[in-house]
Picture (cartoon, rainbow, N blue to C red):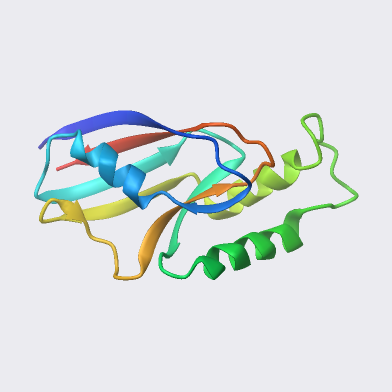
Amino acid sequence: MALYQETILLPPKPRGFHLITSEIENALASIPSIDTGLLHLFIKHTSASLTINENADPTVREDMENFFTDIADDKPYYIHTYEGADDMPAHIKASMLGNSLTIPITNGRMNLGTWQGIYLGEHRDYGGSRRVVVTLFG
């Protein structure tokens, strides 16, 4: 069994949902290839998330942002606001969506569905760069 791991740094992105599938594919290109296995992705932040969803129509990403904004932002009862009004909503969104993904590897490639892409959910107005640990098991 082979095990490979590296941490990639995603450049700062504005608040919202961003396709990062190509960044993950680029990271995999630098790791020795395996034919069959698992890819695990873990984001090392509490105010950003990873998820898989529609990769073709950008309005899906807008709708995702609007939905999570509607349910989590601007609540008068938040106490944790030390880093700004977007801080606690970002933590809630990250907890709801999650910090990791596991994707099968088949024939040396991520075995995603036709319309699936990997999203970075950036939940802060100015979140900065994000670190994702990429681990390949095979």
